[in-house]
Length: 332
Image (cartoon, rainbow, N blue to C red; front, top):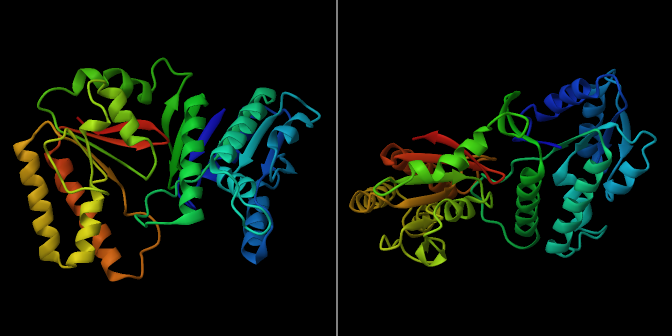
């Protein structure tokens, strides 16, 4: 199984289609379409994708739910299949026709188990998902449950996939490749305990729910949740080793005093505390992706958080970006 992620219009679909054709080597080639044709916008996207696949040899199958059953019914059991995409498949499984939400945990289990079952009967299974975790917006209710569920599915699939790629501007970046002698992700995990050590400041960034805290605790087995200060719920306290959800400090500031001077004070206070405690581990959500919000305070929060993280990264010894639970070292 190959998992392919990236932002909207990043070129991941085009890349996945070309890769599927290459891997099929002229054999049976199927496209599992999970997007339901709801409304003119969805129909336009479906038409665009069909034109993009035209002439490449794909046989299209509607696969809105129960893709394991769809895979089992294929006339060829060693076909190459491209599934597009996990976010649509999840929405189809998680909400009924009246948009009533089903059990999040059960839906995650169902989607993951069905994709793994489909993988077992395919020669190659390419799965497209979508990175929608870095817009910095706080959601509630069904939307937040959906995002959390998608993140869980992506992380579980990334663990089971033989290869994971992120596509940006049409350029694929390998995050994991079990076929290689040693992948970038494996190298990161292997040297995690060697490079990180006493006196080194570590910064972990990535979208929401990408597994940053879990990765830190795995790399530092001497630490537990009792060593975590969660800035979403409590004030900054550097007596604890791990600072979690650092971006929430800037979000609170945007509600109390939305001014450049206030944000600068906050950043200086954070940097001063980090200078006093140079072995701190900082975890923060990236907040700069997505549509620019209409609320000026939300704009200023995202900008201040991004600038603050730039300054913290300059001071940190190690900077790691986490996608689908996989680490990619940017510094150190």
